[in-house]
Structures are given as C-alpha cells and as structure tokens.
Length: 190
Image (cartoon, rainbow, N blue to C red; front, side, top):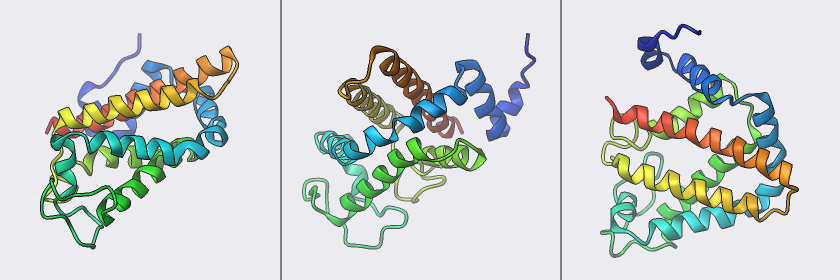
C-alpha cells in the first residue's frame, strides 16, 4: 500500500499530478499514444475549435465570459453578450488559445512545464489568477470540459483507426482530460 501525504496533494502541483497519473495509470504508453495521434488530430483542430465556440455561443451563461476584458487581449470588446459576434477579435483571440492548447496536448512532453501549463489552464479562468473581471463558474468549466471530451472522442472515433488503436487512444485521452479536469477544479476549492 502506498502512503500518500494528503496535505501535500493540495500544496505541491507535481506531487498531485504524479499521484493522479499513477492512480489513473496514465503513463508513457498513454503519452506516446497521445503524441502518436497528433498527425491525425492536427488537421481537425480548427473544426474542434469551431465546434467548441459554436457551443459556447448557444448559451448566455458561457458566451457572457467573452464580454469582459481577457488577460492578454488589447482589442475592442463587445458592449454586451447580445452584440458579441463570432467574428469579433476577442473570439478569434480565444480560438487561437484553444487551438494552441489542443496542439500542446498532442505535441508537448508531459514534464513539469506541461503540468504547470495544464494547471494554469484552470487558474486562468478564475479571477484569482486570470483577468480580475473574468470569473468563469465551475459549472461552466465542467460543461466545457464535458463538451471538449465528447468532441475529442467523436473525432477519434471518426479517424478509422483499428479497434486496438482506437481503444488505446480513447483511454489515453480520457485519462488526460480527467487529469486536466482535476487541475481546473482545484482552483475552485480555495
């Protein structure tokens, strides 16, 4: 039986990630599978990004988060959720961020820098670490992660992989997205 320092799970990101990855059995084979999917997934990243933003635009509860000033965005903003359009600069700016995130998932090594990056994805959606004007409720983050997970699953299922490769790829991404979800949720417990 492994001894886990539970308070340390809340204090040290690397320890937390190592524990979760070990518990879920997310390892080198999963990382190799995810990296191996890069060639097949890269061409469909723009469609995945568009699908995510089409979904976000369907609900005022998610679309409203693009009206306040975003960290790093200097352009013009819409006056309200009703006037915010898919073609607005802020949406294009955020779409680029999502595209880079999806690319990072399938190309970057899963080292300390990547774990820090995954953790910042969670933190940046809160007012504590992102824009002071932006505070995305956890329910909206969970809805987004559920949609992204389903979109990735649907994409993997459409690639025409043999049954073994498809199963390995689905399982690897499932574990990764659960790890990401934990690194989002932890920023809402403070």
